[in-house]
Length: 496
Image 1 (tube, rainbow, N blue to C red):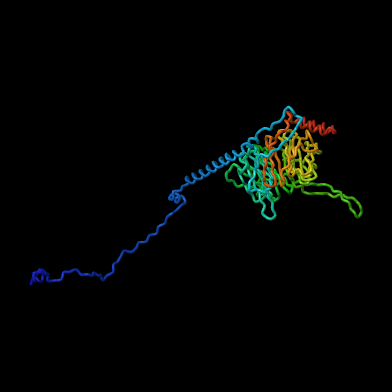
Image 2 (image 1 turned 45 degrees about the vertical axis):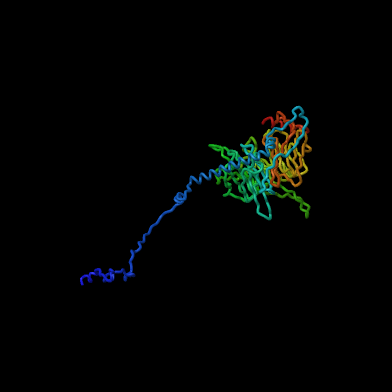
């Protein structure tokens, strides 16, 4: 009985079985749900900066500078490579540009001029732009700047300034584009890297051509008058401590102003070009003559400083007058005389005699003047307007001029009735300016199609040993009938 209660083994039919059930239940279920811990919430903030982001991303400032330096070095290498490749194609012509011309020293009486086009400077972006100005750099003789202008009634006006090098005539060294046409250029006298430009809207810009990326600065932004700036010249003026640099400009309203390259607020109105004259009129009703006074503005066209007296400057006007004045005189001008019967396009002094200068204009004439004498010493006439002219830097009696598609070389020691040489370009060319190179063996021209050409002069006569005496003798021979004027000229020139 006790064995049964303790579920002891029972032998039944030779089988060992238990007297009670001991198998595990097949299903386990709970009557109460399982509970979990509550979720703990916590507020947390963090600060992220550009430096942390760059640090985490592995892109720091040093890496950026390194990449920028590598890019600049690549540009320089590409720039030098471009010059090397270009020199392979233009090496002979570049050597010819710097080669001295050959002259027959044993035959000084014969003269023969030959022009050969050796180089062209053009950019497809500025085709059909008119070239308005060209200036050589004061320090580097291989660098020159060109001003471009485009005026179109249908589309917007445009302008540009390009810095060209003789080492690369295919593509300019620097390009600066503007919304308005550029009319005049000049390099700074104290800093050869600074280029000054005048625009059609009246702005005067300063450009640092040494910088890789540079935005032109307007120096007259606070005193803008919205008249075309036709001519600008930089000059140095002595102060108490140093020589300060200024810019003298003349605009289409006849205002002559002085601007400082250092201070934008320094603006001085030198004078206003005003003409006062008397006009004779006839009263047809009573057949009586009476006079009326004319007062009108004279738009300025060109400014030229005296080569030795740095305080004196000359201004050409659109109605033919030439005005002489000094920087210190701001109320009125010293001298005024009638030079041409049309606009005066240029005034340039002789590089060998500071008292002699030429003027040229729309009346087809180049006139040679001497300082403080209001009548021309010599007049060279052509059959078309003289667009531009320049003195030769190696021969005191040689002048080059352009009219339309023709280049004229004048030598008034040999011939004054007509040029000693005329070179005609192909149809469709209209020259706008001309300049001698600094060593005098080449002529640089610009046209209205945006093309700069370089012509090499060969077979020129040998220049005189005494260049100042040569120009004096040539002028005396032309004015042999006026001995009084010859005596005055000789006295003035010998006193210089």
